[in-house]
Image (cartoon, rainbow, N blue to C red; front, top):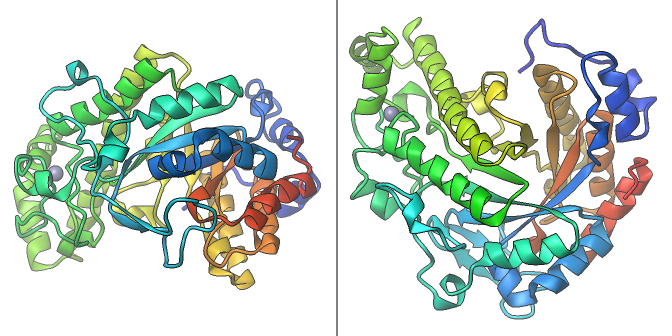
Length: 414
Ligand SMILES: [Zn+2]
C-alpha cells in the first residue's frame, strides 16, 4: 500500500488526459525522458497447448486483429491447473475442450550446460515435450515485430522433486515442516543459494538463447499463511538471518508460541521482504549482464502481497516493470471495478510516476465487453504503461474484440 510520502495524483488529473503519451509526459515533466517513447504495451499470455492446437500463426492473427496485441509471452513453466480456469470449455480450441496443466513443467528446451544442481523438468507428453514452444513463439512473433517474453508461473519445481531431492531447498513452516498451505504448492526458498542460482539460470537461458525482450516472474516468494502456517523458517533463512545479525531461533520460538507476537512478527516479515528483494537483485544483475536492456517484470499474482512476503516498493530497485494481476472483469460484477481502480492507483502511488506498471485485464469467465472496456479505461486513467490479457485460452472472440474497442475508447493508438 502507498506510504504517506509516496507521490500521488488526483483522479481529476487523470481523467483530463486521454492517451498514454500525454499521461506519461504530465507525470514525469523533469525527472527524465518520459516513457512515452515506448508504445502502450498490450500483451497476451500463451500456453504451449494453445500453440499446438490452434497453430501459432492463427493465434497471433487473432490477438493482433481482434485485440491489438503488440507483445506476447509464453507461460514457460506452468503450475498444475485445470484449463480453462473456473470450469467450462475452451471457446475456440479446435482440438480439445479442456486441459489440465502438469506440475511445473517447462515447455521450452533448456540448454542443460547452463544449469547447476536444479534443472527444468519437461512435460511428460510427447506432443508437448518434443517441440520447443518458446522457439515457435519467438520465431513467429519476431517476424511480426511483436515484443516477446516468457513467464515462470508460481512453482519453480514440481511437488515431487520439492519434497524429494530438493527437500533441503523447500520452504519450512514454523514447526519445521515442509510448508503445505496449498495441496499442490511446495515453494523453494529464495534464500537457498541453489534456488536463486536456478531462477537466474532459467531466465538467463531464455534471455540469451531466445533473445527475449522481457521475462516475467510470478514465482511464489514466501508461502502465505502468516507465521503460523506460512514460510519460511528453513535452514537457509536461519543462515541468512544470522548474517544479518538476527536471532532467528529466538524469533521462531516466539512465533511458534504466538504467531501474532510483536515485534517478532514484523521482524520476520521485514526479513522476508528483504530476502525477496535480494532474490530479484541477483536475477536482475545476471540478466542485465547477459542482455542489457532486458525487461525484468514481476507479476504481483496476489491480492495482498504482504501475505507472501512481498512489498512492491522494496522489490522495485531490482525490477524493470511490474504487472498487477487484477482480474475483476472476470467476476461479471461491475461493483468490483472500483476495487480495481483503487489497486492500480495504489500501485502507481507506491511505485512513483515513471516506473513501468502494467494492469492485467481478464478476458475470460464472466467478463463482458463492457467490463473489459471499463477495465482498460481504468488502466489508462491510473497511468498504467500497458495491459496484459489473461488469458487467451479462455477468451471468446467478442471479449478479444472488446480489447481493441476499449483501447480506441481510451485514446490508445494501435
Ligand atoms: Zn527459507
